[in-house]
Image (cartoon, rainbow, N blue to C red; front, side, top):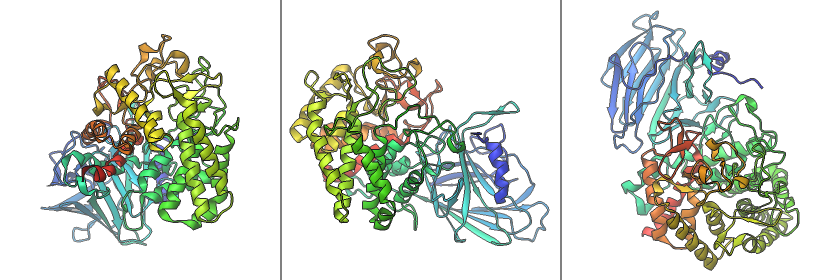
Length: 632
């Protein structure tokens, strides 16, 4: 399938009457001498005088005057001449060919925490565009997208680590054009930027005046016990970081130019339950529903067979397996249950019940030997990976196979949630799913507990061997989801925290390692050292690189939540507070001097990530809701 470049997208957008000017090879990282400027505690803005475009933009949704080191905007090439009129808090633009007494084509008025943009029908004016260098900020546009690259108003423009604009208009039903790409193709020798673009249509014959309002907002749950505590500033600015919509796929994704993953949708849905409304008529759960509808209609995602490179002309990476990942359908089912329970949408449930039952039945049927636990078709035996085939779950370079402890935890949660929904709506077969969940639980601890280490192994391969690398996420999610009782949970957590101390991992500002000891060569699916693939049999030469023990914010939520559930408050705070500080400082997004990104690091802080922004890690912010109970 052909991949469309940014320039091709810009050209095709003329069908909508919107032309996004091309990028200038020279980025603008600060205000120019010929710029109009406005500053308040919530924003610092510079606008060009010769063209209706933001030259630089820093916002702080908390009004504390926090400014980014490099405002992330990309400058456009002037395609039409304008003259500007400036006052203390506004700038207006007329097309040079307009009569001087005619209304301006565009007018921008600034106040403490908002920007008003007015477009008047005055000749052939162009759209107003915001072009963001994604390498400097992984911005996203959050709203309902019924068509590719079109988002309905109201919507949000969210800039992680900075803040959020809520965008509204006086014209009902208006849509903005948006795109996001992460390719670095070269056009005439000039590399393109990774970018996110938003285009505001100008006034027209149909709409002779359009008023856009961009209001800076902070969207987070009101947690009484942490109100005004600066430790939680990262929570307040970034609570909605987990929501990133890919405008080409029209679904929640790793970030706005990255892959959609069926096996992570449950994370977004779990957090969406506690997210305040994004705007009038727009909730975070609407983004979950939009994504679920796409999957129900047949869309594929990473983790599902059929998801390919450049899927639907987006910058995607193939799922290279003959089998769906074991955690994909439980994740989709969990997300659907969270949506139904949160929205009380029985109409949607009734319309889509056959698809939900299909997801539940796929999960149940994966219990091949009928012992209650679901199994992945690949054996997970030591030394059976070829560097191409994908293992059972999210941790796609670690050799999870056959009986996978993590995927079974998701299956347990999903089947219980779905069975309860069916029971509450008097639908048949509810007992089938809750009974299977109970059967799964009865086999879980005895199957995965390793008496030699005192913790749960990651998987039990087909040859009967336990594969145990002190997986932090496996043990914590089992406790979080209730697969271990309190005594078992405390005993496992004692061993896990003791091992963490003995191996010398103490810097929780980095997040947590997925595993505390090296994954051996025969249990690692990737052979490339860059992805943690070891050359030595014991795995020590690749330890702390990427998923082979690298530290990340991903899955830290479950460790903190497990400790909270066990009422081990000092332990949970010891992990959570440094992570919150790192989130506030932007230490999980962007790239390091070595060119790799901050989403994965060694225990000394060397970067080995690749996404630039991996939204999964921000699920940890959900654990801040437990602070009310712990601090009051």
